[in-house]
Length: 181
Image (tube, rainbow, N blue to C red; front, side):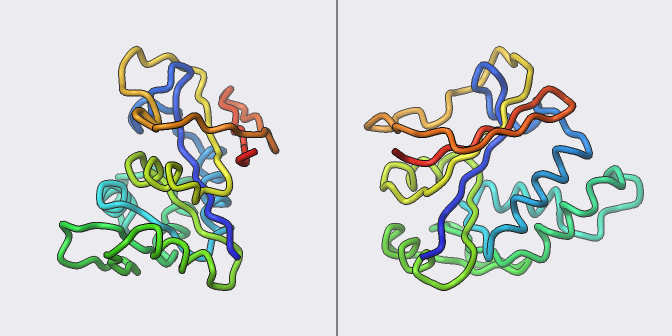
């Protein structure tokens, strides 16, 4: 069974607004490596549309720093499953999935391979509630945003996790990997 991994960037005060994190070559390299470990990406509509608008290639000249190119290539080439009841169609190497979320994700996990990756907020919250996430990575940036809702707000029960990995970056950000206990 392939594991479902989740990764998100957040500040010390738990803000997950993508505009407040540190964007540098080392963190983008780590993100590309994370995505490359997966056979496919599982996104909800919001994160799919956000990633597509930001990373679909080719980008206009000068729009992104050169060091973002490996991440753009990696995410562009990745197979994507998009969970949405409102989108009519998707492209960018993506397939629209509908129906029962648990059944769909369990079927994807049963396929052979190295793993699945998910990102965003709403879909991962639903997946966590169902106990379908096998590994969590929180990349904590050394910033206090002072705004934003908390991650997993409204989760009906506490997630009890065990630390299995830690990586520090030159920026001061720290990637903390956990698995459910």
